[in-house]
Image 1 (tube, rainbow, N blue to C red):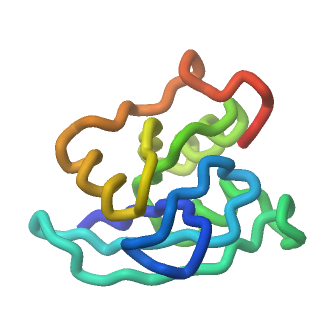
Image 2 (image 1 turned 180 degrees about the horizontal axis):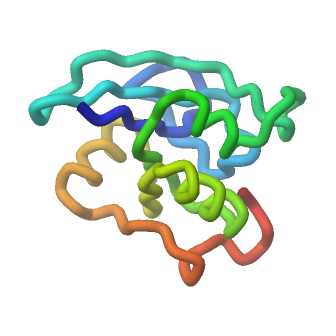
Length: 123
């Protein structure tokens, strides 16, 4: 079983647009993915400091139980924190949540690295 986290701009689930700024994302879509299909979808409101909560996006994602993150891009601190928590981070996601999931399934997203981190400090 894989639990995939994808930052989103609204509560539309699979049809939500992906939030390209992880540090300011208002929602996260958690997808329980097993045997090459979606088993369950949960939408969580972000509790990140950047939007008035009490934890960083990395802490929030790590606490969600997710073991994969699909996102547009993120900064080096977030990459380090998530990888240290055992979460595989994939970048290059765009469009909707379901489009990002399909891109991941097809191997179109790239594993995040410090070389690919967002240079302007976004997390």
